[in-house]
Image (cartoon, rainbow, N blue to C red; front, side, top):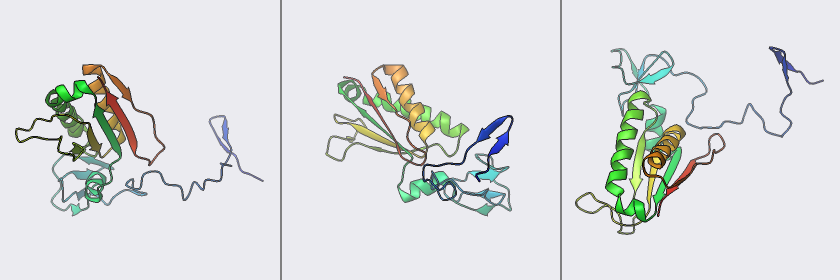
Length: 182
């Protein structure tokens, strides 16, 4: 006999799709349990207290523990990718990157685990020039979180128009977004 969860008048049937919910984990960087408190990330100096990572100064007795964002950066495994392409992007690249950097700084100041990891210019010689300007070719931005990936894509779309494709991904899967304007 299957047990039903009953709470607030609703009943919940157990899963019958073959997925073992005990063993099924979405994000490998999301811990099963809380970190010991207080803790501090040795890479970025974010502190962990009251179940959250913050930019508040760490307590003197804090134990070093790498935060999930720095673990992603260290392992080279982003949670979100945003590709930017099109003739408009190529001609307004510096302006778009300023918007990306400003938006990322605002989000990072509020949410320490949401950060820009890298900007990849394609590696075909069409990327960053000596003066810091980018010529032609698509850009791929990698992020430590899905929320920041989508938020920066929406900020670019709101500021410059174009078309943003930001489908929701399964929990734990890399979010792949694409913005384009010709």
